Image (cartoon, rainbow, N blue to C red; front, side, top):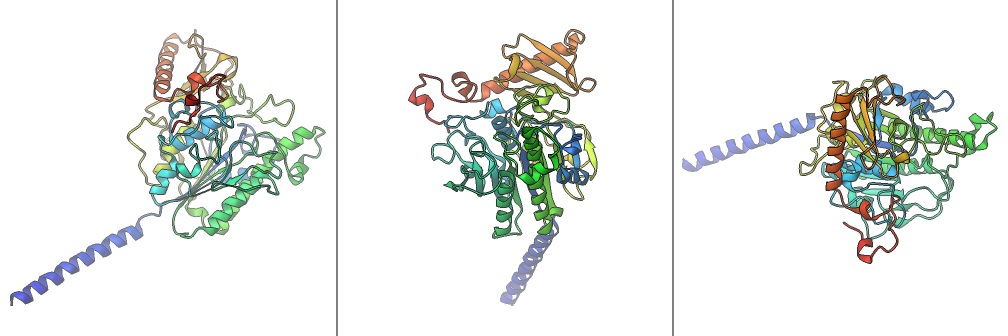
Length: 476
């Protein structure tokens, strides 16, 4: 009798466990699938270079259509007015002087994205994502070498990249590496080539049910610009060959982007994929000569400047059924915001053992709010910025700009004066005093936390003369 009771009790217990397991499986099956994420980053693309951002001359039909399908971010900023620092902030959520990538990284430099930083692809990989990076890397000086971290060190399963620019130009580049192996000469143009690599990676994934994180960082529109004849043809009426090349380069970028979006559609992936398009900084050159003809849309300054033209960039986000289509946002968003935002989209938690400068702006993208609660204001510092205007801080519509020595300041109301024409530092003494205090405190905080590379390296990231072998050794 006792044996029968034991058997009955055991059967009941097993039944309860089975019901619980079925309930758990059912809950997991009904839980929303984590979205795929594509982060598409253009190089040196000006705020006014796309048709959907007001260009009356450049043909960008794919990005224009994409903007109609999603949300235009009209107050979108890079975290730096040059490339390497802005990229480091995207992957870490931390302002460049804090994460150590404080300037553009010259080939051979010891500056790199350190392994002490926790990169976005690594956290998404832990969440179950496949991860891939294609295009420009520019987060180390010793590319494809053992001495410094490479894209796979930071969590990318597959990568196809260059250290900095495509060489000898966008046409037939010879300097790509794939998963730590040199690729050799390629035929074609950089933007379409990196997108083809991305499409091939998507098609070849072993477990297509897994979510993916795909970084596509094109070389367009960075020098040395070379555009296929088919993309220059729409501008054939221009007598200036360099201008044809630049405008064709923007259209070449647009074509590559459109090709990737079509691949997502054809594979049935678009509906559950959050796609972000933006740029690393404002346009190069003076816009008047050569192939560096990018448009700031009338904003002051260009690449390297902490004025709006150097840091305000196009931004567009699309997530069908989640991001309201055909909308625009005037909420200021900076490059470091993408780290916590994309983690939130994936249902992942940001690290809590370090300061994050970025804020989660996913509620803004989803149309749930038009405000962002920030622990820290938008902040920029670049010691190679022109005219000794090296630092800036934006809080609301107000922006303060400072010299490196923190003895000269300018104050602008961007809501009324987006082109930064009128310095209000003397007309707004209380506001000026408060923003000056915050800028000085923020600068001291980030410089104190980061490595000391900038104290002993030149602004371009190279070692100064007389540097010791010990100082040349890469810091991990």
